[in-house]
Amino acid sequence: MGCEIRDIKLAESGRRKIEWVRRNCDLLRGLEEEFGRTRPFEGRKIALSIHLEAKTAFLCTVLKAGGAQMFITGSNPLSTQDDVAAALAEAGMEVHAWYGATEEEYNSHIEHVLENNCEIIIDDGGDLVNMLHTRFPEKIQYVIGGCEETTTGIIRLKAMDKAGKLKFPMVLVNDADCKHLFDNRYGTGQSVWDGINRTTNLIVCGKTVVVAGYGWCGKGVAMRAKGLGAKVVVTEIDPIKAIEAVMDGFEVMPMAEAAKVGDFFVTVTGCAGVVTTEHFPMMKDGAICCNAGHFDVEVDVAGLKKMAVQSAQMRNNIMGYKLENGRWIYILAEGRLVNLAAGDGHPAEIMDMSFAIQALSAKYLVEHGKELTTKLISVPKEVDRLVALRKLEYMGKQIDSLTPEQEAYLNREE
Image (cartoon, rainbow, N blue to C red; front, side, top):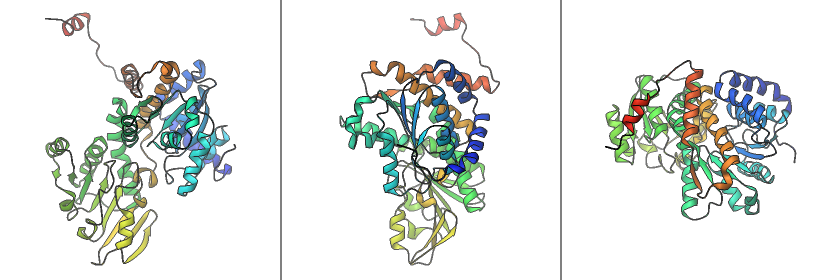
């Protein structure tokens, strides 16, 4: 099947975006050169569903340089950039994605990718893996294994594995240190505020930001809000993370209390029903709600629509809803990922590390997939360490090494 994209004439703009990423992704650029020589994916088919913007496109280019035949779709209808999709199609990859896809179109694009008997699955959120198991079980025989990019996707994988439904090994890329410690914290922290600031054009300093969830993403969002001069409130269900937030200098309270004081609300929990119709009437007039979790289930936008007495589009990616009490509540990017649906996603240098982990994990599956006996696979420590060492080298940094005496001391038995 051919590509399903908006307009191939947009390719030149997409090429410029990808080239900018290439210039700022030393790790991936090095892997592109290495894979071009070694061809680790020669003759392999790779299905990929990640937010389809320029960093993802460069990952696809790197895998193609390694010999892979690429079948690509997006992982969110509002994060696909049509010019980037066109550039990949022009480069000879099969792409099924466009911005603003309906739910039916989005699922159809995934189906068309999965029809190709792919051997490696690279997923972001779990939609590829889920549809493969539920609609295309006959295609599973071709799969060596896959990689999952997100916390949300790993939650889904663990549920499938616990139920005995996961049929092939998946590398838990998000659990790699060189992924979640940097991508989730520094990448999400910066890109969420890039998306909020460019969308609202409002000041952050002096306001109260409520961050729901204090995992690595929540830590990053809270850290950057503090840096922008905001007072930060954290809501949590995990007492250990809540204590950590307190010791990091943030207020901690239930959402029912935080709803009364927040100016900005950012959900990053990976769970549904975090900001609900219980909370909207408590909010200040002009409160702004957005989500940075993978799925648009954390802020109950549908419930807000039903209880609103009036609605209006205020700016691009800002919908306003007036409640019976006269207060307006604003939702950014329809409650979808604000950093991608209303921005360009994580900085290139951050995704350089995450996608290097992805590429090397895919290579690991090709080399070792048939030997794996468990379904949930940690990123090999040597891969994590290799990415960190190479990144430091590209940054012009050096570190110490243990002397033989130090190694002997650390390995002593007494």
